[in-house]
Length: 342
Ligand SMILES: [Zn+2]
Image 1 (cartoon, rainbow, N blue to C red):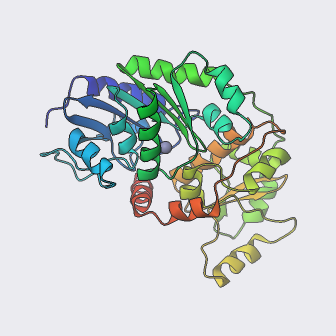
Image 2 (cartoon, helix red, strand yellow):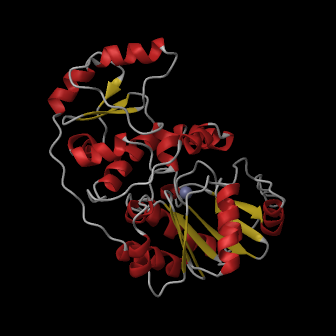
Image 3 (cartoon, rainbow, N blue to C red):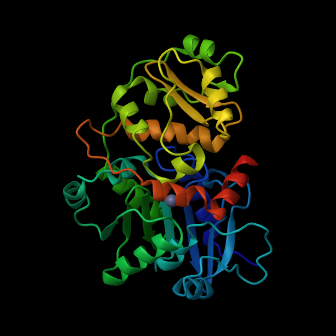
């Protein structure tokens, strides 16, 4: 199947967007271009950052995808002769529903820092004034989110969708225009970062000596543990889907003077895997040795989001039901596996 010329432009733009941690973390985010009845969309589990180095796009039969969606079928039909073993992104329905030629979905940090709040409606209205935009409450990604998006844009067309507890979608006619629109929204929603006290690396090394834990590669991950406000937010619940998928619900804390060996033994005794990431209050963060690149980058993402939440913010957490739906979603297991194999 012959890809359109624009796909090369989309690859370059996707690689740029994908390598900016303030816009995309790991396998999150996706992009697409419509070419006649074919939707070229990012494949599930692939990273936008890899867009120029490997094939991350798959062709989807657009009208068939829209018809399946209308019937409540989440499975996305690839175009005939697609010639790939990859699956289309689990967020393909968003791309199929938006009428724009180019659609870009990002988990941008500034947008998320607003979109996890219940007290941000007036700020959105003020800051996004003049753009054609919608705000949508949190919906499980895939079919439920696609339904909500379909209803919103049927009421009034929009180029910008702010997804509650999730991220941002923009649609435009060209790659440049889509990238510029993401930059524009992020600039309008820009928040100041709160500085965090330094981590104690020696103390962390002593805590994880002889265990299956290690320090994160990105030192920013420690900020969630050393800044007490970020820590309070992070330990009170889950803010957005990819956090739950890659790190589990919320973030556990290793209590003062509790031994990491004891905590691991307790998890094992309860038939649970020890947590992928945990916080040592005032000291820093730890990751399990086998944590994937996807998990690494989700820890950094949470640090970047929580340090942008003011102390007065009223935060909306995902419910236990939302978390359960994310953790028991087969499509997500596939995506995680691909990310682990990257
Ligand atoms: Zn998303």
